[in-house]
Structure formats: C-alpha cells, structure tokens
Amino acid sequence: MGNLLLSLPLLAHILIGFYFTFFGFWNIYHWISITEVMIQRHLPCPFFLLSFLIAFQIITGVMLMFGILIKLTALALIPFVLIFVFILHPFWKFKGEVRKQHMALFVTNLTMCLGALILLVNTISPITQWRSLLIF
Image (tube, rainbow, N blue to C red; front, side, top):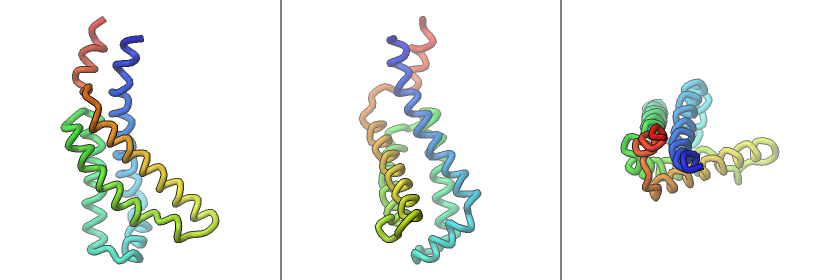
C-alpha cells in the first residue's frame, strides 16, 4: 500500500504532462481550424503564436512527464491555460451543441490548471518516487 501511495504523485505528473503533450500534437493536426479561430478572435500573428503555443504545450508536457523543473513548469502553465481557455473556448457566446463542446473544453482546461496548481504544492518529486518504488 505504501508503494501505491508513493506512486500516485508520479502518476499525476505523467498524466498531466501527457495531457499537455497530447493536445500539443492534437493542435498540430488541427492547425488550419485553430488558426482560423485565432484570426476570427483578432489574435496577433496567429501562425507564429500558434507555433509558439504548440511548442510550449509539448515541451512543458514532456518536462512534467519526466520531472524536469516541475514547479517552474507548472507555474508557467497556469497563466497559459487561464488566458487561452477564455480566448479559445468562450462557451457563453455559443448555443446548442457547440456550446456544450466549448464548455467541456473550458472545464477540462480549468481542471488541468487545478492539476498544475496541485503540482506546485506537491513536495514529492518523481525522482524520489522512482527511487522509493525500486527499493522493496
């Protein structure tokens, strides 16, 4: 039971990091539709901005998965998520099925922001967890 409790924060790092990495690649796949939305919302330099945001998502996701500068990475992700969730998923402006989709993405991203906040207060690092899991 002790090893299970020690492995839970490690699993959290991996899952939260995977979320950001996965959606970074997802955004590459949906490049055209995302840039169209960014142009509609009058964001500056949408192609450059989207490239930067995708790179940021993938890099920070991988950093979380591998336990690299976790607190700094989580601290960087929080404003990133908060700003872009309000810009890209304003569910209150839509109706019907589109509203439900945007609301689901809005809530999901805020939940991931909460996950990043939890990583800020977590004192156990993945490296110490791996060591303790390997010692029987």
